[in-house]
Image (cartoon, rainbow, N blue to C red; front, side, top):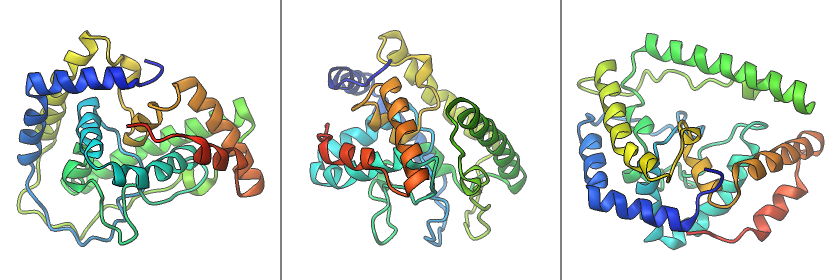
Length: 246
């Protein structure tokens, strides 16, 4: 899939409704024990991997809240194109640090705090190595130096999150497997492809506007301008001219 079209999104939503996928997704969400969060938002610093059915769940919510989406739209564009040159809070947070899609947030957000510290550190090492590989790619292929603070950025393990019972790794994997089973319906209908696996929540919305190649080329141009001048005229033009799609 190069670009998410409204036609395919509408087909996907109809598939989700007719197949009971939204209800199944909520059922999975409800099995996750609610923890006590201090609300520091230190964990809300990146676009988390989001299954397609989860994106559809968020999208459908924003369809019925267009005013909210219009507020989010420019923030999503800026976050996508600048995420490799500066660290900034999740664009779904409001000025008070509250999640504007809290009841529709993806599985990854809901499971934060349910990992053991050992699991969390192992995951960070994997992410860090991937960041190093990406930084080398941008340096060798495009002559761009991804800032060290972005490459090495680490969301610290949260010691303050309180939960009566953590979900074990096998339970977390079972949730992922159940969601992926639902997603097979969209693969079979050609609505998504294997290239879409691991897509971040912000990226799903960007791919409604630009195809992947166009988004990638724009990102390189914007990164280059931003790293050289601390601002990108291309980005400002994209924000001004891009029409809200929903």
